[in-house]
Amino acid sequence: MFRAYFYILLFSATLFSDIYLIPDETELLLYKLKKDFRDAKQVDIITQELSEKKIFRILVKFLNRDSTELNLILDPNKNSLIYKLSIYQGINIKTLSGIREAPMNLNFILIDNSILYIFSNSFSKIALNQSYGTVLRFKARDMIKRFMSIFTILTKRSSMINNLR
Image 1 (cartoon, helix red, strand yellow):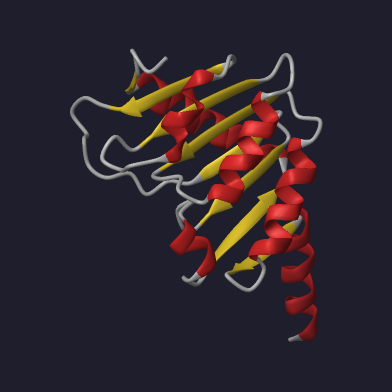
Image 2 (tube, rainbow, N blue to C red):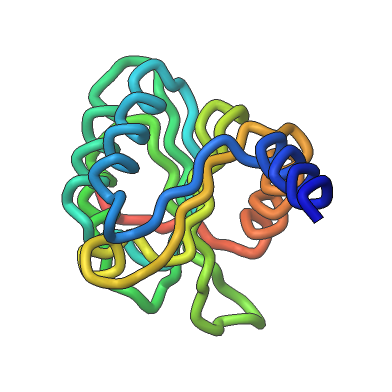
């Protein structure tokens, strides 16, 4: 029994490098996000909603640096602070459109194609501060490649938002 448990833990450690329990570890998560964004050049985000101001400020600080690129795919049915980011250079905002206009329940952040965060909750203040959930932080290449293929599929199914600037 112990041996099986040990191998499960060993496998898990190679799969993801951190797991955060929300809301108990929200501040630790935000600290880690800030650290990962510090030297980042490219960030890809899929989210149903962004209304948590602390994550919004991390994105603003990222966009205020030179030569950064932020690619966002949003749920068109949700209000979001992300639209306020449209004044910055280096940002591409898209919404899912077409045949599948169902609500989106995806919440991912990919930093420089090397660090992947998967959120069980949205990036809303309530979800990160008052609801239980988890956030996984991956560095495993297989997981990141799979996310990149999901991002590509959703990019093809989405439409660029115009007239925001």
